[in-house]
Image (cartoon, rainbow, N blue to C red; front, side, top):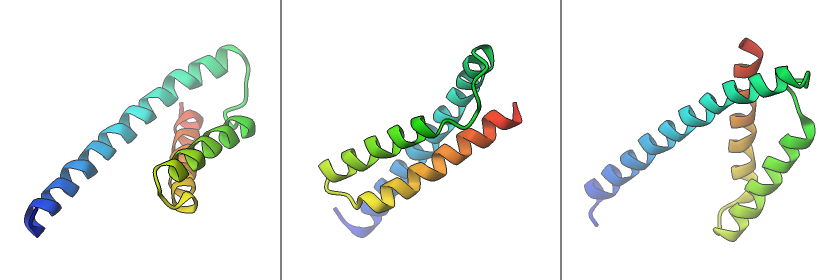
Length: 87
């Protein structure tokens, strides 16, 4: 694979990641409705820790730096919490 092809592949992957982030954000609306029905706070520290631990474990399994992966997932969680707060 040459440089141009590799960059094109990265671009495709980046666009897929953005689509998945959008899909994840759309789930925030469903989660918001469920939390509202059950009178649960938007911020769920236990769930946050569960998600971060799962991401860390998967990162290690995949040979990725778990610190960076946890940072990415922290941002994703914050995005979802902000989305839920705005609903």
